[in-house]
Length: 244
Image (cartoon, rainbow, N blue to C red; front, side, top):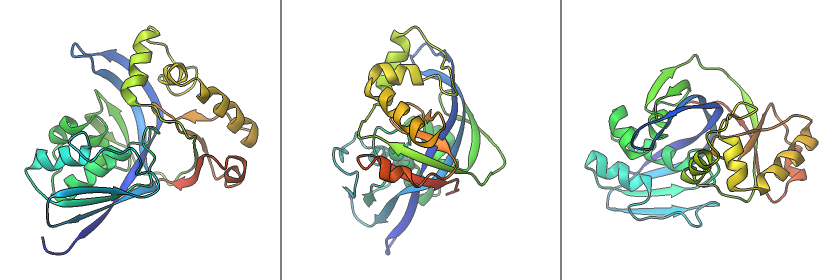
């Protein structure tokens, strides 16, 4: 590798999520429908050995071995200088870190689902992209026909770690969500401010929003660009489905 390689790392949107069980090792089993969307980080891979994170949502992103990019490089036995320009907020339920790791795997021409799953539960889907039903702990991918869809995302200035949402789900006794997402009651328990955001977004657009995975992003179908003016302290993005 002599010249830098520039890749898009697409965010994922979890359209529906059911939790179907818990493995003996504590990992939760899911049935979910996921799509990749055109909101993306930019991953630049060049010769060397290092990790640089920059961009609007770089603050607080670790660059040590907690970062999934470093785990991906270690898993494939490669070294590189990787620069990630973050446009996907962390703790938003959009799989930004997994998308970055999947970009590294694609660069290395690695499509091994087992390797991807060992890096992180969302990495197998991020590696494949498109639209799929996702089962197991996220490592079983059943592709679905691609659909050209538009969604509007509203990400409050809140962050929810996926592990915290699942711990709250366990503590609540495994609730079933009233809508499409079983993690919504748990995320609301973990971050009570989310409820006010849900209600404000619903009042503004006339539709009840859906929580993206473990949150904190709420989304509605269709394009609602006017929401940007209503929520200047949030990330508001009109997105379309996409493929890596």
